[in-house]
Picture (tube, one colour):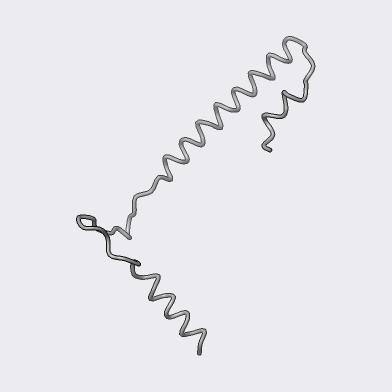
Length: 79
């Protein structure tokens, strides 16, 4: 019985906003504003740039026949 009461209360709370919106602002629960496309685009651009940067550094190291050192790897491995 107690669990059912908590579930019904939780459902009631989740269906309504916690506070009224500020004056001049209307709530949009159907299609809210999101930054997801911007986040995906920015992440994709930086992954591509990072891949090209690491590839260029490795290509120069291989072409100049220099040995790989610890500092070549430490920035490509997150700490």
